[in-house]
Image: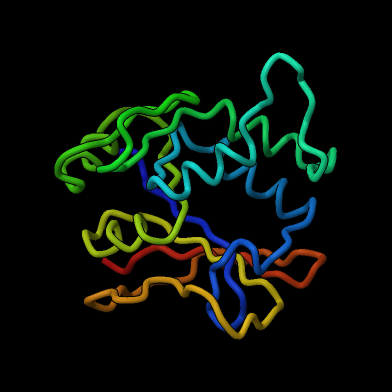
Length: 186
C-alpha cells in the first residue's frame, strides 16, 4: 500500500499561512525531493489553484514569472510534472496533469493508496484535516519556521480527536527552520 505523506510549513505559533513565510533555496530543494518521492500529489481545490497559479510552467513563451528566483525552478519543474489528484465538489474540470476526485473521500483515497507505487503526497490545510479525521495520513512533516506570525490560519483547527504521533526524524536547515517528521502511533 502506498503511504500518504503530508508536509507543511508552520510558524512557531502554529500559523500555516503560506504568505507568512518565505521558504529559501534549501527548503525549496527539500520540498522538491519530498514531492519527487511520491507518485502523485493530492490537493484540495484551494491548494491546487494556488500551486497552479504559482508553479505551472509558462506557455509557449517559456518566460518565468518575475518574482521567481532561478533556484525555485527545480521545485517548479517537479510540481509541474507531478500527477495530481484534486478533491473538489465545485470544480467542473482540471488539467495540469490532474484528475478530479469525487464521491466518498475515504473510499477514493484508500483506492489511491492501494495502487502500486512509492507514495502519495498531500498538501494544504482543509483536506489534510479531513484525512487526519479518517486516519489516512501515514506520515506528517512539519517544517517549523523560526517566526511568530501572531495571526492567520492554524493547522488541524477543529480536529475531533487526538492523533498521537511518534517522531521518526529531524532535519535542521541553515535558516533555523526544523523539519520534524512523525508517524501516527497505531
